[in-house]
Image (cartoon, rainbow, N blue to C red; front, side, top):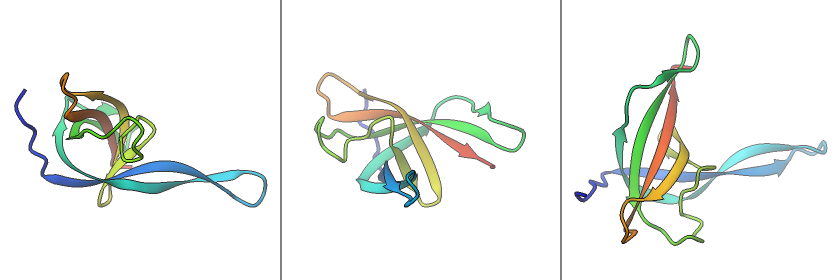
Length: 110
């Protein structure tokens, strides 16, 4: 495997439940850190509805410890300005575990 080009700075965000004062909650997104990343499209997007589509990406970042709050998980997302990449799966890129490969999707056109 060639070394990834980590040229984009992405903010890692995690969902957090906040009480709404009426017995329920609202979900907000909290920054958990940032990562230099390589963002590569992966295949054609599939249609979500008539006005929006989903694009798929492979996002490579440096590895973080299993218990680190800055380690990406499938419940999280990356933010690049106004663009949001929802993380669907995460795996190590090689046995040495130097990098993590995140499979993510971005909904566009909504």
